[in-house]
Structures are given as C-alpha cells and as structure tokens.
Length: 159
View 1 (tube, rainbow, N blue to C red):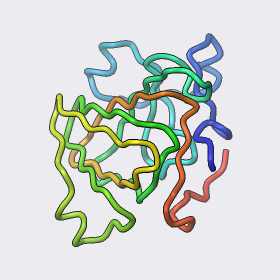
View 2: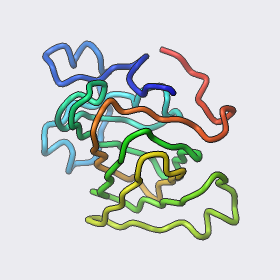
View 3: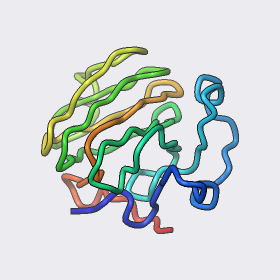
C-alpha cells in the first residue's frame, strides 16, 4: 500500500509554508477562501495542485483537501483503503469505475458538475479526468493512501 503523504506530507501547521510551494493562480473561488496551495503529492500524476481544508490526511483522523486540476488531467485506475467523498467546486469532474481507462471507457464516465458529489467506497477501483480547470473537494478518514490498479501507472517523480 502506498501512502499519499509518505513522501510529500501536507499539514495545516505553521510549517505548511515550508512544505508547499507558492502557487501561480488557483481559481478565484479558492483564493477567496485563503487556501495555501502547492503541488499535489508525488503519488498523483504531475499537474495537479492541492490545498488542505481541514485535518491532516497523513493521520488516522478525518481530513478534507481540495484538488485543482487542469483541463484534461487524468488519474489512472486506482483504489483507496478507506472511503472517499468528492464534491465538485468548479469545472466538470469525470468519474469512471473499473480497472481500465481507455477511449471507450472515457465515453461512459459520469460527468459531475459544480455542486454534485460522489463516493468511492474502500477498495472500489475508479479513475478520473478533469474537463476544464476543475476543483474537487476530497474528504474521508485518514490516513489517505492511493494504490494504482496497474503498478506501471504509478508516477515515477520523487521529491
């Protein structure tokens, strides 16, 4: 099992500024809330940014984060050992279930619009894609971990 925050821990303590890099310009909605943004941990494909809304995703306690994804951003099939709740705040978040993300399965993905939500129960294999610049709140019970269905999909970048 791979822990999302084993190599890039994001916390809400004063040291957050040292952990996260400065952001260029996340959505105005997020800026209005005064969130501190940085690159998503290295378990995610490159290109996403993340801000902690509450809690500490690395601890065995409730947490909430917001992911900012550019248009076309994809998260290959994966699963989590705990339940995950997602709420779309901006853009369109495409969500699919199963072990294969390909041109055929992409056409069948559920398109979640602003305000809509979805749950992925523990061990449920799923994948995602952003249409337009997309913000999604993700919450659950930590510690957060992400396991790719196909080990070759695991990002190779390291911090």
